[in-house]
Image 1 (cartoon, rainbow, N blue to C red):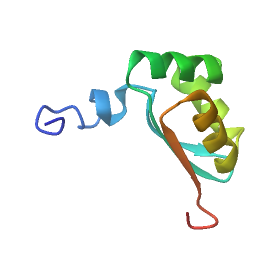
Image 2 (tube, rainbow, N blue to C red):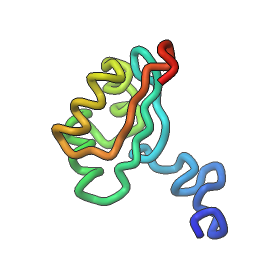
Image 3 (tube, one colour):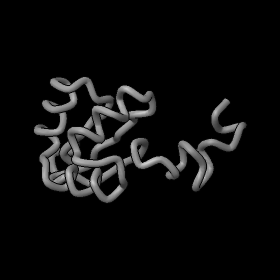
Image 4 (tube, helix red, strand yellow):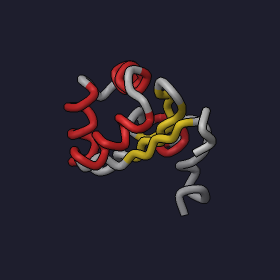
Length: 88
């Protein structure tokens, strides 16, 4: 349904328009963030120091995949990070 509604197209709500829904680089890999619901988005903004793409990018780049997954579990943030050097 999201694809049919155009939400996943480039620039759509699920295609890059929302900074709290996307894939970012971390210090040793990648992290997929899906903090769409307001309570998840608010927690993400609190933890990252802001709701902007720049704030999320800075925060992710300063963390390893393992660190991000620990924070995600502790803070209940829907994200998953993986170390690309290890192929996970």
